[in-house]
Length: 264
Image 1 (cartoon, helix red, strand yellow):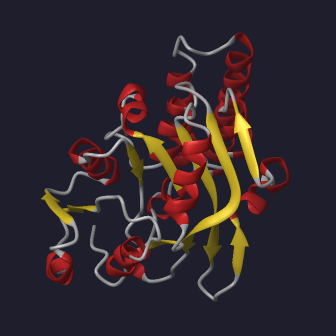
Image 2: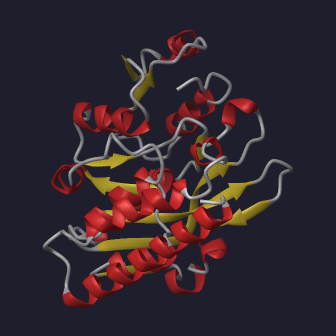
């Protein structure tokens, strides 16, 4: 949505992939900034889909539903893949056909050019190593929140079974679906960075968290909703249920802290 300055760079990073057996679906979520025009030169290499503005979750769901492949690789319009991203991930998929999701590390590039490894920032790098095979990924995900859409590869059938993205969430929607996917099967995790996420300062790039900066408790309220729903899923083991309940209490406590800071 309204990513004219960056969306072509995202597309270019997909077009130069060393692995070429894919389709590129670009979902324009009601842009008003000329996005359709800048995508015109790519129309013979992408499937362009326009819809009224419904939010990031609805846009991703449209792409999932329209896709023809067995595997889905997300790419946010202002992120970029490294050229061997898909080749490396598909290689692991062939070696571990039983996994339903393959998460990779990514490099976060700050406004002034400084870089940081996502896994390093999360304290997950030493645990992930070069490759980590996880039978029940929910506990690791709750502790480290290491999965991000632009660095993940996930089975389309798994996304459908997990219930797709929640179109009513405008924040933490990726955390929500990764929690649910973590109950669908085995994961693989790659310590290697395969994508780049840019933290930009332009007004255009204000993220959803910043839009609620006048209500510091909002982010934690959303997490309470997500975790409350998670604990009702019957696929949780007894230990997973205890850990989910623990995280629910943490988020509820933080709602209280932020509300008190707001004078409420």
